[in-house]
Amino acid sequence: MKIGILTSGGDAPGMNAILYKLISSVDNDTKIIAFINGYQGLIENNFIVLEKKLVMNCSHLGGSIIKSGRSEEFKTKQGFKKALTNIILNKLNLLIILGGDGSFKGAKELIANDIKVIFVPCTIDNDLEYSTQTLGFDSAVNAVVESFDKIKQTMLSNNRIFLCEVMGRHCPDIAKTCFKATDSTYLISKKQDLNLKKIYKSISIALEKGEEAPSIIVKENLVNIYNLAKDIQNYFDIETRACQIGYIQRGTQPSVFDRIYARDFVIEIINCIKQNINNVALGIKNNEIFKLNLRNDL
Image (cartoon, rainbow, N blue to C red; front, side, top):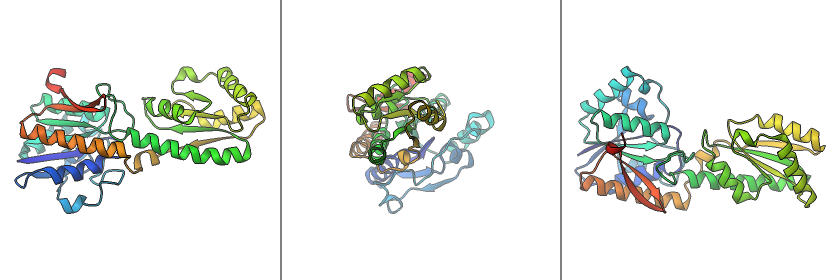
């Protein structure tokens, strides 16, 4: 049997764990080739044979050792045709795709063209509606909370107000979860939250209650946090700082939960291979792995 695998879109903690656990779980008659840089690797037929020695010490690392990225060319008819041709030329029995919302759409397009696929939700954004959680989300949230706690210590030392911008693209889940976990003063997770009167009122209440370093969690792509910090500083005459947590959310080590999810995903992948089940998306519901039939969902 010959299996292809790729990691697509933004990298997520836990991708490497899946690569390691998968190569450690297949039988000796199964060959796995990993396409480099996601769907672009399919188009360019750029791949390596995945062997255990290549992934032996990567399970605990963030990122993706086979590279991940978004491919605009894959969205074109010509690029998609090249990808299909290379899948056929390599005589793949199955293609395993690790990624988020955009990668999910690509997987469904491949299935519509008679390619056998298993999709695994791997994105810190947690933006796949069919699955209550995605691999990498818990790790990203833990990275934010750890950074937030450190930033707050220096803000408390100087009695400063501060803003923390977190990732999530178009999904507010990281911001919402971190807001709850850090007991922050105010949450900006959507455009409607950009109300200066509400922001000022929340900070005023926090200051009246004795909070020495009021904080605001902000989802990315909504506001220039540095300009907002200046507005807040001018209003309260209190030094205000803005911080972007940034790519440590992706590059962080996978959390315990994500390592366990990676293991459980691979167990389900192996079960699917043994039972000749494909064209499914794996997901998490009530902390359990389940399969979504993508043929019926097309």
